Length: 356
Image (tube, rainbow, N blue to C red; front, side, top):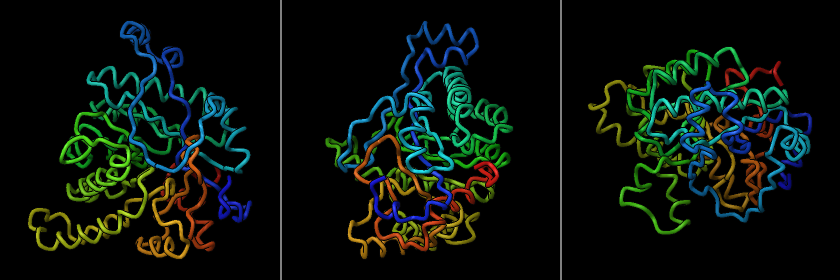
């Protein structure tokens, strides 16, 4: 790591990287982990790399990715886990399975990907954990996959893409969240889009800078949906991790939503407290990419606007080689132990101290 704040952190501190990306699996990877029918269908439909277009999350200079770094668990350990001294890393596969119109295909792709993650990554390095893919297109199948993985505590959360079919607070998704919470899974929301809808309320943007900047609006809409629809009143144990979202937009959303709630609360009688309290209790954010100012003093003021420091989880976004993958500039050294690992251990019920 080149970040000087991370370099200054005590090497004895637990380090949990909450956002690491292995390579996308291909047909040859998934077929051995699918039923015979679906292995043949992957070939018949010419399904190979399940690319899911994700909006750019940073305009910082990025170095080319070395394929060997994410080819397998050995490459990941050599390039990232060992040099940084990581105790646990959460693997996130942003897969095109989330965009499939065919719910049966989506369910098969999700299960095969999870089996591939377990066999080829988690089994090969005890430091690795993973987000499970589940088919939001078919909540019943998603619940079955959650229950299948319930005994494998190396899977610590379920993964949802940011720009999906519908707002994530919709009631049809509640069985997924209920099953996740029952078994201790968090809900992770990661940038990506099924491209069913334009990423802004006025259509598609023309430039990368627009998409990068306005991605925060989509994060804000998903947070507002989960809170306003009453998800946490029905499923109070559910915890949500926002990955690659930045942080500077959240305080404004919390203040605005709580202010407007005072005048519109008659529509949401289940919200008995200001939304900012629900957000502070149930949501966490990863640190990469940090969208605050580069000046340490100003960055510290931005960080101070969060309700409490427990909301920050360290992440590298490896192997996406941002100019800086370390701790946010301006983060007080007193918070290093919490942000580097303790906060993750608190939010991920399935990630136990004895595991790492």
